[in-house]
Length: 102
Image (cartoon, rainbow, N blue to C red; front, side, top):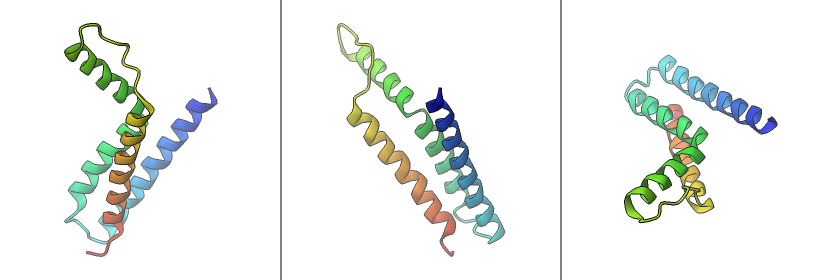
């Protein structure tokens, strides 16, 4: 149960950081990157939180469409780590874009 609380706290921290970046952009008038920032955060935060579920869903679909005897869809550690790397990269690049002077 404690792991669920940590995940929710982490999600809340990510949302707060994203909102700080959004407020920073609006206050400083950086409207050129506002739409890409919002889109990046709307994609990055939920995909980080639901990484395991998304990997499992993708494996089930691939298995159902490509294999004669579908598997349970358990994702590999490699797939989950690669997903996290991509999600964190998107999150960090969006924050860098938010705090760059334009």
